[in-house]
Image (cartoon, rainbow, N blue to C red; front, side):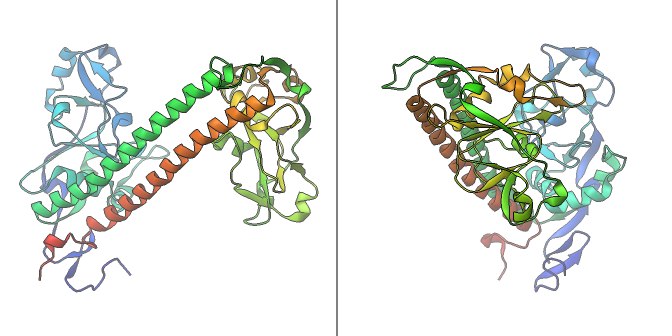
Length: 424
């Protein structure tokens, strides 16, 4: 059953069931142009300064990102002057993430876009931000999915976008809907910036603390240079095939999950195995440091993660385990060091061509500056506090995004109406 089907006050249209007073129309009937930006080779016209040219990577949901800009020669741009962006135009990605759309601000007018689609909405019929919001909505994406052509690299052409159907409430309601969603967008962007700033602060803090350039109050003892083999025993994980995983059971970690986990410490497990398989696998214990034993490039080799829990858990194949001696080293401190200041040293140990490996015999010889255990603990505590602050903000961001998704999905279809536009 379709959303709002047979709901009183709603009618069936090309875009589904919408309020009776709303209309529908194709994009080509509510816009003065639907065209493609510069589509010819432009590398010869790149300049350090000149006319701005936006690319797909500059298109964010609802707005054009002015970072990582390209500039083109004014004489070359003049040949394409009819393609210049105007304030209120909508730029839509054709390939990669087809359908992702942004509204052009007045300060961005006069710029060019490379191969993206340009729609110039008729302001007497449709509010630019409403049309952009609908294209970005799940309903718009469904239509875009039906328009895609091509093989592995899907794309959408201007003719297909022009034929797209759009629901049209009154202009005041369009503007009000877009305004509500913009409030959520501003909140989301504000949180994203705050999280980015917190991450940069944490990165700088790590560089200072893990190198000894900055010492925490109360710590004055010298650091020792040690080899990894001096602070722990080495083991190898045992192969756990993807087909052997289950949704419940004993937790385990596979080497690929070390790469996809942004944390330096295991907080939750994504994979589980049966007790029978666990009996044949390699257990990990509190204060173990786990290295991914292989990777596709030398740059990614050596990613590590610490296990600080007491819960029974196991490591899959291609994982090198260092059981750090709790009397002299903390795995969470070691993980922080080897994922930042010490990472380059590990990159040089990678061996192989198509698949790069790192071996225990080489890891054992790796040297690192090691502060006294109490200072390691204090540094790890500071970094955990920074992580918790970021995690709190990320949970808040997830809630804002969920709320925005709910509103986006329902406001643009009329499933939810703003009070001032409900008749009777």
